[in-house]
Amino acid sequence: MVAGTHSALQNRVTPAGEVVSDPGRGLLMGNRGCLHHPDRTLGTARWRTKAWICCTLNWRDIKRDPMPPGRWTALFFLDEATSLAAGHRPCAYCRRQEFLAYAGAWQRAAGLTQRPRAAEMDTRLHAERLVPGTRRQQTRPALAGDLPDGVMIRHDGVLGLLAGGRLLPWSFGGYLDPLDLGAADSVELLTPPSSVAVLGAGYQPLLHPTAGAIRVVG
Figure 1 (cartoon, rainbow, N blue to C red):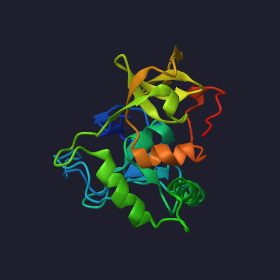
Figure 2: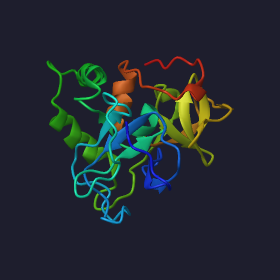
Figure 3: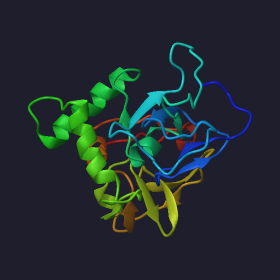
């Protein structure tokens, strides 16, 4: 549990990887190391480690400062599909079962003989999530019909979740009314390829309730 603040800090992450200010907290929290100054504003760095993790909001009812001096910067996501698109993976400590499920799906997708280590996945994800030498998210062209449910895409300028063959527009408060999407429609894929493969191998991400009763399938 993260202690509240009187004003919105710059620690809300969009599927496009932007870290912005918004009063909402979403369903999950993340960490990339300490990104803030003593005055609780962000510097230019957007990571201090390759281990971009996605954590539970409430850990044993412990209240934590979202920006403790010199330690870590709490980041917040609408849901797990958002965090995966931004390049994060489940925390191996506070979300142990989800981490094992994610690593197991990675193993199946890659045809490995054993589950990969966290550091191995972090190295691969770090190479996939950013345009080399920049802080910009690396996106890729794709056809909607070639992608598993649970990925984040952009189509005709609308960013959203692919679920049940439809595009659910993303917002800080949740998903909006679904839009029709054809299997042959060209889209911009935001979710890194390794996490796309994990979703395709059956990993079930935690979705915001506004995604409705759509079952995410691989």
